[in-house]
Image 1 (cartoon, rainbow, N blue to C red):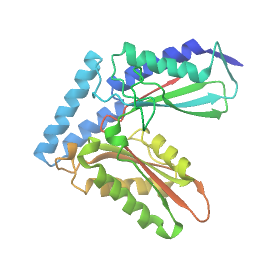
Image 2: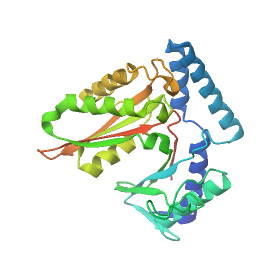
Image 3: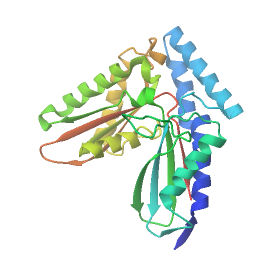
Image 4: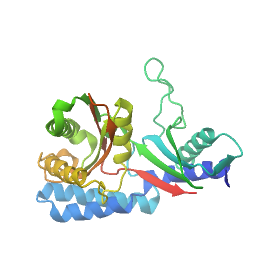
Length: 281
C-alpha cells in the first residue's frame, strides 16, 4: 500500500494554486493562437492578441493572469490502495490553499458566511473539495481557481424528458447570452447532463476544466459538443463581448444516467483563462 504524507499534499496544493493562477495550460494557449488566425473581426483579433500577451507576461513574471484569483475547487481522485498519513486529508488541502494564496500573493476572495456577516477569511479558504475513491495507488489532484465573473453566469435547470435536445440547446444559448461580456470571453463551457440536481452541476464543473482539445468519447455527445460550440460562436458575442466569432473556445459535455422523469442540465461557464492545474502523486 502506497503511503502519501499530508505534508506532500499540502505542498502540492500550494504549488497548484500558484500555477493555476499564473500559467495558462498548453491547450488554452494553443486555442488563443488558433482563434486569432480565424477571427474575422479586427477588434476581436486585437483583443485576442492582447489576451495572449497578458498570459505571456503573467507566466514570465509569475503574476496572476487575472486579479480575480477565484475560489478554489479541488477534485481529488484517491486510489483505494493509498494510505494518507501524517494528518487529516482535507485539512492538508485547506492548508495548501492558504499557503498558496499567501505565498503566491494571490487575491483572497472567500468570505466566511454567505448572507449575514460575509467577512473575508483572509487566506481564500475554505476550498470546495470533491473526493472520489478510484482503483489504484495514486492520488490525483486538480485545483481549479474559479473566478465569479464567469461562475455567476452558470445555470442549472431541471428539464423534463419532453424538453429533449431542443430544450438543452435553448438553455445553453440562454447561458451564453446571459454570460455575454461578464464572463470574459472567449469562454470554455462545461455542460452536465443527467443524474440529479447536484450531479449535473458537478458534471458541468468538471467538464469546464477538461482540455479544449478533448472530445466526449460517446459519438453523439461529441457531435453535440461541436453543434453547441457553433451555436455559441454564432451569437456574435465575441472576445470580451465586443463582437466577433470567437465567443467560446470549447463546449465540453459530461453525462450520467438519470431518472425516467428527469433531464437535469447544468452549464458551468469558465472565462478565457480556464484556470486549473493538475498533479498525480
